[in-house]
Every structure is written in structure tokens, then in C-alpha cells.
Amino acid sequence: MYSKRQQERLTVICLVHSALVLGLLQSGAMGARRLRGGRSERRASLLPSAPHRQRGDTTTTESFALDFTAVEDNMDSFMTQVKNLAQSLYPCSAQKLDNDMKLHFLENTSVTCNDGTPAGYYLKESRGSRRWLIFLEGGWYCFNKENCDSRYETMRRLMSSSKWPQTKTGTGILSPLPEDNPHWWNANMVFIPYCSSDVWSGATPKTDQNDYAFMGSLIIKEVVKDLLSKGLDNGKILLLAGSSAGGTGVLLNVDAVAELLEEQGHPNIQVRGLSDSGWFLDNKQYLCTDCVDTISCAPTEAIKRGIKYWGGVVPERCRLAHEGSEWNCFFGYRVYPTIRRPVFVVQWLFDEAQLTVDNIHLMGQPVQEGQWRYIQNLGIELRNTLKDVPAMFAPACLSHEVITRNYWIDIQVKGTSLPRALHCWERSLHDNSKNNKAPPKGCPMHLIDNCPWPHCNPTCPTIRDQITGQEMNVIQFLMHMGFDVQKMAQQQGMDPSKLLGMLSSGS
Figure 1 (spheres, rainbow, N blue to C red):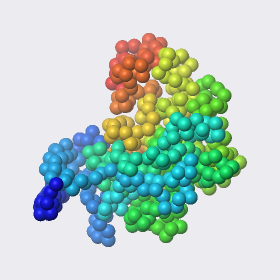
Figure 2: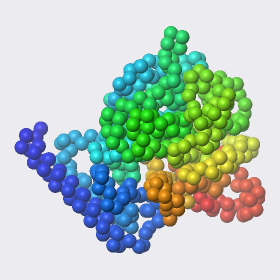
Figure 3: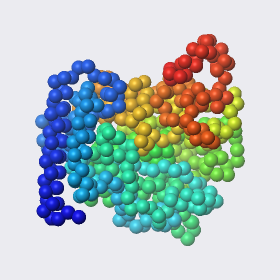
Figure 4: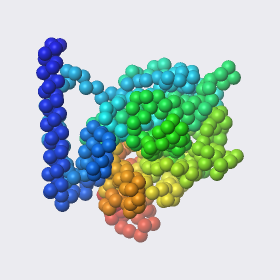
């Protein structure tokens, strides 16, 4: 252990090194402005800049509020220098600079998980930052006593807080490391565990008549209220994000969060949504099966039953648009037109969860021709529902969830990464607030793959054979699914070898 004098010395060393890091950041930014010109598009797409600030705006300060756009030209060299300096801060590790999010239970103990245990959230504060990211966890749902009982036995973590750990490490867009999270790394990070099994829509407490509480929508509101006393009251931007059921939860709750903040006297906090893998279709299943559990039940029937069982709440504007059939509001393309706040949609064109509920299982026997057509049509249907969404990112990949994955910065659509697209969206919102309606030049935010097959995008996540665990390339994967190269080439009017070359390159 260090003596008091040694601790003081280490503190001075840390401060000196921090000053050097900041000096490097600022001098690097100014130097890059002078050298601006030969920009590498690939690096620009992978590494978006930090939040923009108005020139001359001295009303508020934010820690590390620097504009990285200028250093994108030399970002590799720049980040190497920063990392080297950061590594020289090793003595500061004695002071345990903790990046983990810490568990807090709600102050309002009447808002609970399914089994009546207290609901809560994980928080990592970022002193000086006025940006807040609240993430809603996903994890399917249950819609009657039988499958909720089964869920409680097999996935209790998603229905109870009794065994939640005291800390949680953020990954992807929740990471505090700039190399993993180039735009949001310095935000206040909040992770809300999913323990209501209701797609974040319920408002029903546990009683003698109700075996389970379904309070997802209330949990979100109580977390926001608790955060106001932890710095959110001075916030500028709140990004409500979520994946899978959490992504649908964003669509259902983003307006309600903004309205709550207005009611609490904070109308200037800009509320936005980021929905990942929550844009489900209410399409017809490939094979119709009895509605026994979440997996086998058609999406529309499961939600119809669930919304009654949960006492589900949907946005008022969507409720009025679909009065008597409020279940429609759980499907992205139906609820989205009624949402007033800006929402960025991230959706795989061949979402594994969508295919599962449609009774398409890809990793068993090779798929039949009818299944193959169904899969291709799914991609077409998703493209059609997303065409009028101005801010979206839709790779032609077979996967589910992305924004909290470590590889989230590697996925690209038409040469632009997801962090870059999100940054472009934020720039457009910033510019629009100044009545500049023109989108930022060279900064795309409506990105959707045109290629027609699963994993035809070469930046898609790796697929592994579920039996052998071995990685599969695109051609191996398509062959595994029963893809007939000769027949497909004939249908497309091209030579089979040319088609194979296109698949290999992701064209």
C-alpha cells in the first residue's frame, strides 16, 4: 500500500500526465485542421467525431468536449500517441479508476420486477458530461402464467433482481473506452436490466390475484426520476437506447420519457431514441404452429395475448391511431409514424429472432427452396418498411442485436460504420436545431444494403457452425443452407463463377 505522501505524489503525477494528454488532444486537433485534405474515407467512417459545440459558447462546460473531426486524417497515429500516454498513467491505477457501472435500486420500492423484488439500474457517472445514455436490456417476454412460470424457472435473472451483481462492465456503445466507443464513451452510462418480461410496456403490480408484476414502463420512468438527483437535471441530451425487446421498448417509451422530463420541469433536455433489433414484422409465419410459447407463437398472437396479460401501455398517439387493436404499436413500422422524438433504427435485414418466430431454423438441415424464398422476401419486406425512416442502418446480415457487441464498430453499410452513421444523425439534429435543414455533406445516415442474401455484406459478424464451432465464410454458409449456385446464377442471368466471385467479395 502507498503512504499518504506517495498517494499525494501519484496524484500530482496523474494530474501532470492528464494535462499532457489534453495538450496532445488539443494540439493534435489544431494540427490536423492545418493538414486537413487527404481524408481516408474508411477511417472517417469508423471513427466519428465527438459532439459538436457552438463557437463562443461559454455557458456550459463539459469534460473532454473536444471535436475529433479534425484529426480523422491522422487518427491511427493520433490514437497511438494517446494510448501510449494513457499507458504511462499506470501508477494512477493504485487509485482504482473504476469504469464499471454500479447497481442502484429504485427509490420507489413499489415498482418491482416480475417476482416483487426491487427493480433498479446500473450507473457510471461521467462528471462534467451533460450527455446521458440509458440502455434497455432485451430478452423476449412471456404472455401467460404457464410460460411465465417456465421463464421464471429457466431465466430467473430476467424476472428477478435477487441475484444481480453489484457492478456491470459496459461494452459496445456502453463502453467507457474511446477506441471501443468513439462518440459516446464519455457519456453518463445507465443500464436498466430487463426484469418485467413485458417488452417494457406493463404497468401492473403484483397482487394476490396477479402472480407476477408487469411494470416495464413504470421502471423506465422511475429510473429517469432517480437520475434527476444524480445530474440528469443538468443534462443536455438523453439517448434512450435498447436492443431486441429493449429496442421495441425504445419505440414504446421515447416520447413518454420526454414528456416526463417536461412534467418534471426539464423541457430543454433533448430526448432521442436508438432502437436496435426491435423492428419486428407482423408477417405470416413460414409454418403456422400452435401458440404454446414465445418461440412457436406467431408474433401478432403473442403480443395480442401479452398486452392483456401485462396491462400493457402504448404511446397515446399510436393508441389513438390503432384504437381497439393497440397490439399494432409493438411493431416498428406501425408505431414509428406516430413518434414525435427523433429515433435512429438499427436492424439486421435477416434478423435471427424474426426468423425464429417465423419458424425458419437455419442451422439444422439445409433449407428448402420455399424457405430460401421466404428468407429473401423477409429482407425485401424489411427494406420496404424502412424506406421512409430517415435515420437507419440495415446491414444484410443474419444476426440479432449489435450496439452492445464488441464488433459494433466494424460493421459497415456502403462504407460507413454504425458509429459514424450515428454521429451523422446527431450532427443533423444539431444543425436542424439551428434551422439548417440541409444534411451534413459526406455524412450518410440512411444506410441499407441492397444485396439480396444473408451475409452478402463482407463486414457481417462471423457465423459459426453450431455443431463444430468452426467459422464459416459466406459461400460455406450459403451452401450449408442449401444455396444452389448453378440455379441462382441461371436465375440472375450470369456465369456461376462470376456469382461466386461476387459472393466472396460481398458485392
